[in-house]
Amino acid sequence: MKKAPFLHTEKTYNTIMVDILIALSPVLVWSVFIFGARVLTIAALTVSFCIIFEFCSRYLLNKRRLESAIKHSTDLSSVVTGLLITFMLPVTVPLYLPIFTAFFAVVIAKQLFGGIGKNIFNPAVFAIAFIKILLPSFTSIFTKPFAYFNPLTAELDSSLIETVRVFSPLQMLGRGHVYEEGFSDLFYGTSAGNMGEVAVLILILGAIYLSYRKVIDIKGSLSFVATVFMLAFLFPVGDGETIYFAMTELMSGGVILLAVFACNDFTTTPRQSKGKVIFGVGCGILTVVIRYSFSHFEGVYVAILAMNLLTPLIDKLTRKTPYGMIKEKEPLTLKLLQKAHNRYKKR
Image: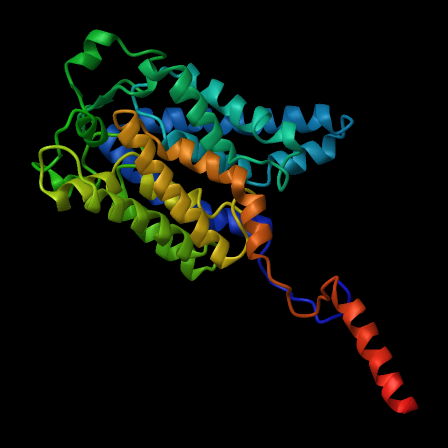
């Protein structure tokens, strides 16, 4: 930065995290209504251990500075990460799995890269993608809505799960069947799936709130969902109507959840609006390609991580010179103009 003016905003990192938590809170309430109190147990465990791992890693990696460790572990980012992890898991997971996932999110994906502002991947998405690839048998078991389980049972009995087990809409697409019979369930959040991804209507309301608060750039989210819908509509597979197939692709498998909360991460997504649109389109294309290639595996997580890697390149291609900053080539240009002006005066 060479000269003033400088921009000032009343928003701080904590106020932004509070806004995100406000948008996530109705999703948590709805998830509890659909899947029962076990959602609260998983959320409490995940959030608590995200905070614990944040504190321990900051304390050990930052020369054992207690004050700094407390400050970083209480900045609410760990709470947001914990809730996102919860929302990307089914209610049937054993209670130790969210703790394991929290470790990968905070310690591996976040702190080993330097912490807030330095991580390459979105921590929650990185951890969930790793767990879903490593332990698919735990993360692909879904049950009917309103089939409540004991919230304090460490690991649910398999025979109990089988009595209420159903395929999620995305799993049905992988078997060539479109979820037409309960299409409205996808929108209103009364279908099988991960705990937070089913609340599509509430996620949309959260996106509107965050956009109003200028926490997210809605263009990136819209480009993501529009790309998924258009590709699914133009290239449908399965036995159902094209529109139903496209809408099921859009409203299942975490597309809406990650379009709102992962496509607008401050560290791992492009900064410029044009870059966010490119990021969203890339996520949409990769999501559909991965789903079509691997029997509708939840490719949205891998798509987000792949585009996270491309974020520096997208930023470089779309970067603009802000008001008050000077491009590197400008001083040379000014010197040439000055020399030409001096020659003209001598004449």
